[in-house]
Image 1 (cartoon, rainbow, N blue to C red):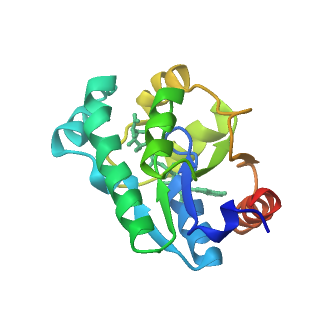
Image 2: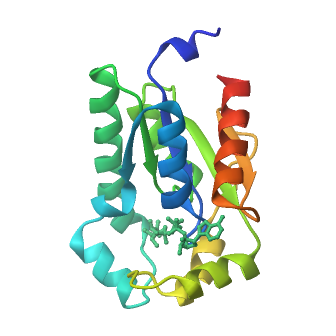
Image 3: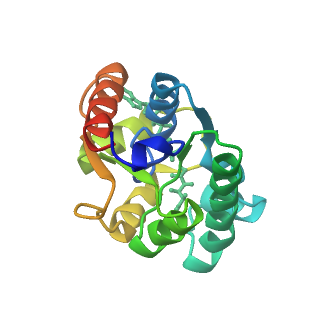
Length: 175
Ligand SMILES: Nc1ncnc2c1ncn2[C@@H]1O[C@H](COP(=O)(O)OP(=O)(O)OP(=O)(O)O)[C@@H](O)[C@H]1O
Ligand SMILES: O=C(O)[C@H](O)[C@@H](O)[C@H](O)[C@H](O)CO
């Protein structure tokens, strides 16, 4: 076992809107027996209002939110408890910020899917504040995390169970 695996596990389930962060994040947390936090629940009300109106968030909108997520991770690790958080984490600088909060030991599960599939999933989803019209800007903002430390990529064109299984297997291979 590596040094990393001795510290409590901290995982960000990332990707654009509709990629399945909430569904997959819950499953991954359950598999590892760690706490799950829905990152969207930590957005300031003004951010949710903006997105509901179809206006993309800016860096300035996202920093306080990333700060909050970082605080949750730091607090959980300080208690010796593992944590998984769903968070779009679209840009490399955002991920670096989150890595710092985790003392460098942070894993990312990147949920990758085609625009068509993402559109379909967002279109079928009911009662969510995020309009499908924002997918384009989400995809434009996304800086793919491939090659960064602690990142596993999972294709979302499968059942939730199979995606969770693939993510857990890939994570265990690098822990
Ligand atoms: N593998 C899957 N197969 C079928 N439907 C899925 C799958 N994964 C997620 N879904 C559905 O697609 C929609 C988007 O998933 P989910 O809300 O988990 O994504 P998200 O990345 O958390 O989105 P957001 O960040 O916009 O909240 C939901 O309606 C969810 O039930
Ligand atoms: O960084 C962002 O633009 C936001 O976090 C979005 O990704 C949404 O919160 C999320 O996807 C909900 O639909």
